Amino acid sequence: MASMKELVSFMASQLVDDPGSVQVTETESEDTRVFELRVAKDELGKVIGKQGRTARAMRSVLSAAAGIDKMKARLEIVE
Amino acid sequence: MSAKMEYNGSDVDEAIRNACAALKVERDQVDVEIVATGSTGVFGIFGRKKAVVRVGLKNGGAKGKAQSRPARAGQDEAVVKVRSKREDVVGDPVSAEDIELIKSDLGQILALMNCPSEITIDQDANNKVHAHISGEHVEVIVGAEGQTLDGLQYLMRKIITRKFPQKVLFSLDAGDFRSNRTEELQERAVRLAQEVKDTGKTRTIPAINPAERRIVHMALQNDTEIRSRSVGDGIFKKVLIYLPGKGRKRTSRKRKGGEARPR
Image 1 (tube, each protein chain N blue to C red):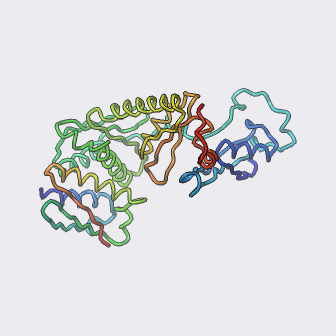
Image 2: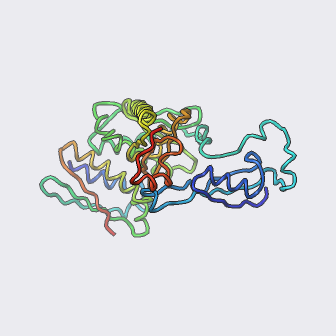
Image 3: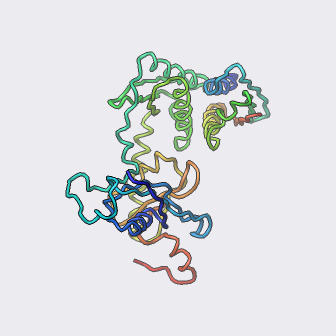
């Protein structure tokens, strides 16, 4: 679903101070969607979290959403 | 309060005993703050960490008056602040508009997940906000072992702390997941404890999160025949259930080659 990209950008923009800097690109192979998330450099920590906890939480939410369509999803946070 | 000193030992109890011995006072005359609980590490050999406690004399008492202990009730109880405070944490009140904001953010995420669901939110006496999700998508939202639900709860807490200046306590549930999971963990803990008593062998529950570890430890805390503790690094740790005096680092090394001592 197209909304998965929005899901990533919604979650990310709720977590950062500058939602305008949030960018998400999506590439798709047969059964996997790869989302690349970009945020302002000094806000990387906010989307990654302590020991990657925030990133992991976003990933599990994303995987659950992808699982409905029997797809896999990968979230990459790009510097 | 007098200056606090740090003492260590192989576990918290030993660290406290060491502290009392060094200060020549009774256990109930000191305030103890646990700095590190220590760990046995891998096979009790690698990554062993000592337990560290910070100890100060109560009432700033000098060593000299240690023997003349005032018999005031209530004062004599050992003040070990470990986790007891957790039960009565009170959050700041949250207005109806703020509740609506929380609800709409959560609703938005669920909608984008293609799991539009019904959300009900209420507050308890401690101002804790409980959000509950129901509807046909509950299974997806909970995920394997509640992973997705815990992820959502964590994200919502992050979003909430960013959005509101006050201290908001928040919990998220879907269907009957939390209560079922609690029951399941309690049953599992009790079952494993029985196995430990029967066989004398240490049993473990694999990596679970802090809230769930707490459920396990609480389920076993009144059972004096066995002990439980968490080992591992990071958020997810294993819980060991063992007989006192077993599963400790000293035994694991010496037992090698010898027969396991049944109890």
